[in-house]
Amino acid sequence: MQAFRNHAMPRIVNLQSLQELKKIKLDGLQIRFVDAKGVSLGSLAQQVSIVLQGKDKPTYYPTVDNGDVVVVVNAAHIYLPKERWDTLTYWWHTGYPGGAREITAREMWEKDPCQIIARAVNGMLPKNVMRINRMSKLKIFPEGDHPFTDLPLVPLPIKERNKGGINYGWSLPDAFQPANPDRFNLRNKI
Image 1 (cartoon, rainbow, N blue to C red):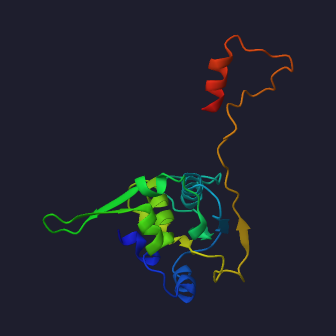
Image 2: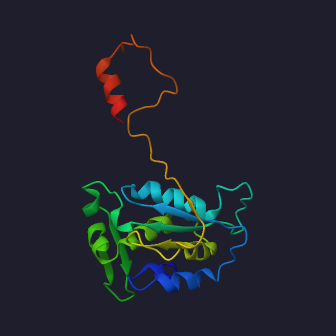
Image 3: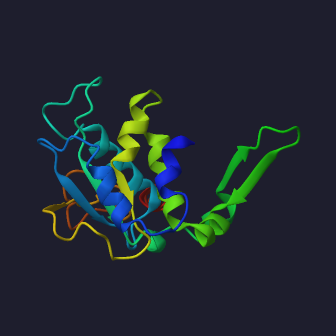
């Protein structure tokens, strides 16, 4: 869990975040900006992990760390379905016998909302040595204020999945009547 040290506690991260950027080689990298307000956790984590790995660039190579720096704001306002706040659990072990601990997403959000996004992104990155370096390029802030206002930020649009039913790739004719309307309506709800 060493990769979460800079996201663990809500503290004065303004100066520390800028100092951590000095350790990263920023040659050819962009600082991508994401507003997490109302965005679902999975979509956000997926897009951020792609950018941290550099998979959105034509120069992507698995053993080269050329991913961009990602700044996520409004982490306290992410979207999870109502029942998911209580069913999504995070666990860890203290190292002592009987030391398994568990916490729900709601409890973790009350402690530190940044930790939910950090753990989701960390779980979507490849499990290798480069994960720690990639996570150091992720800066998460619970509200809209951040210390990167004077740097050139490139917005990162988050693509939401199609929630409006099945996309057929073409428009259905106006006079379309399905042979089995119940089955057709059921498949469009998925």
